[in-house]
Image 1: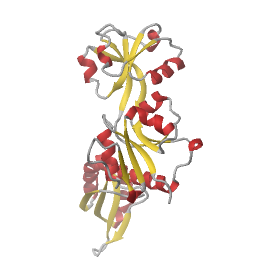
Image 2 (image 1 turned 90 degrees about the vertical axis):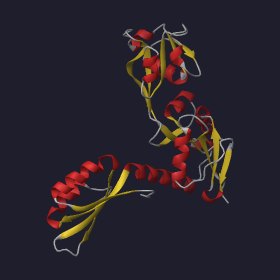
Image 3 (image 1 turned 30 degrees about the vertical axis):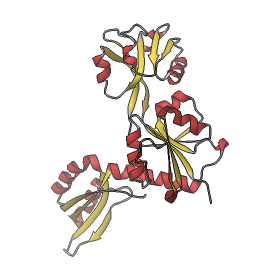
Length: 287
C-alpha cells in the first residue's frame, strides 16, 4: 500500500479558513477542532498537517511533506527549495513600499534608508536585483507603526486594500514588489517523488473547485438559424452542447459561462432571440 500523500495546510491566518473550505469542496476531510495538528483522510489517501503558513514552504522544500498550501510571498521569502505548481484563486495581495504621505520616494531613493518589513528574504532579493543598498529592519508584524516609532524610514508590506496604511498616515509608492496569492507547492524531485496518482487526483479536484466557483451552467433555446451567433456568445470550455427541440427550427444549447458575466450574457442572448434561459450553479466538476 502506498504511503499517504502528506499535505501542509495553514493552521491560522488569512489563508487558513479559505484553504480548508477549498479542500472540503474538493471532497477531503478537514479538522473540526482547531487544536488538531494532524488529520488522516484514509478514504482519499491523504494526511493533512496544520502548520504556521510561513513554515509550510520550508517543510515541503526539505522533503518532510509532499505538498503544501501557502502564499507566493511566503514561498519566495523563505528561500525554500519548493516548487509552485498551482494557483488557488484566493488570498490575493500585493507587496508594496509605503512612506509618510508627501515623501515622494522612489525605489532608488531607498539607498541607505531603513526599511521595515516582515519579508526580509523577499525584499533583500528585490533590492539587490536593482542595486539598492538599504538597511532592512525585520519585524514580525504591524510594520506600519515602525515609522511613527522611529524604527524605520520606509516600510514594505503586504497590502490588500491599503486602508491600514492610510490610517497610519502612509502612502504607497513604486511598483508592486510582488503580486501574491495562495498557491500549492510541492517538494523537489531530488527529495523523493510524490505519489503521482494521488497528486493527479488532488490537482483535478482543486481545478474542479476553481471551475465550479468561477463558472455557471447556462441552458437556453434558440432558433437554429441563430445558433452560430449564440455559440459565439457562449463558446463553453470546448464547445456548447446542442440538441434539437420538438419545436421545428429550434435547438437547445448548454454551455459553461463565466459566473461574473452571466447576467449581461442573459441580456445579450435574450436580445438575440433566445428563450427559456436558465442558469445553474456548479457544486463540482472534473475537466
